[in-house]
Image (cartoon, rainbow, N blue to C red; front, side, top):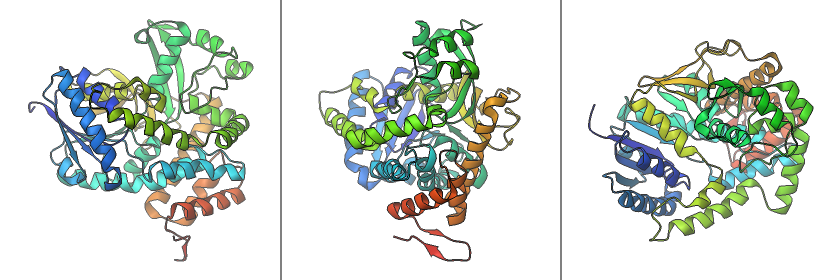
Length: 444
């Protein structure tokens, strides 16, 4: 094994990057990153330079020999990489704002990774990911792709179905956030908590919860049944749970489940928030403006605490722990997005799932659970069908496939609304899709 490793981060100008840099600094003894390449597009050049200079100050303060390289040339960066991480936003926050605001006009939730917004983020993102993979096949065929770009489950599904690349792990900070939330509910240190995770990205359940190895799911559910107790993220309103429902479910839901179990309340909350303070994308634009002003301070040499408001808390722990475990073949257990391979009985073996895995130098090995409980199995299967059809639409750019994906999503109430939303969003994003028979539609 060569001395030190080379990591490339696509979307390096992201406000999240200081989280990642902090994580690599903390783990330098076990994960000696000799080169960290931050890559972005020309539109993101100013942010890339700002974040890159902060990263260099952080590394200098830490006193470690990690070189920070900045470039707009992805292929230059990828050559001989050991790990490639992706954290970009296709269309930037302006596209996210459209994803969130347009569906609201039709009485449908507008959200970054769920419903129509999740579909369109996938349609924009998947072609770029597949381009990155083609570059990796040529320039760093031994590297692992660690994808944090949303919708992470759909992206991982698309790679499995529409490329021959298998060295990809999809990553999300939701499971680690759930673990931290349980620790807070029980007033214990997070390292004493473990959870059996299984499902899909942003549709993952805690099947069992343990404190020091002892099952405590009933105690956690009991606490969640109190109206003033909840677990959520910065970008999802904490509306609590209907006490009798959460007692009946007897599983630990993730924050995104609110969109499916509390659809009406979440829609009203989103609609009101959009009218009063803007969509989440518009709020984030303001937060990012504030963050980058902080990042520009030549005296700043640490990750500012204000970054936690951005919604990416624990990202560095998830990403850096995963890379550390793969590099050192630690064979510890972490929840990631990987190929099912029979771990969940009712999901196709070649589909992407989010599940606890043993992390090895050869990648994640999913821990089989048998099957999901009957009460949640159908919803998970429906979302998996949506992800598969959506990823096909992203690759083929076929209008009818995109319409089918929109229509089968459980947050879209009818085929009529599906078509109305699809047509307006295709035009708003300027996406060029083709109807069967060759008729082009909604080209901008």
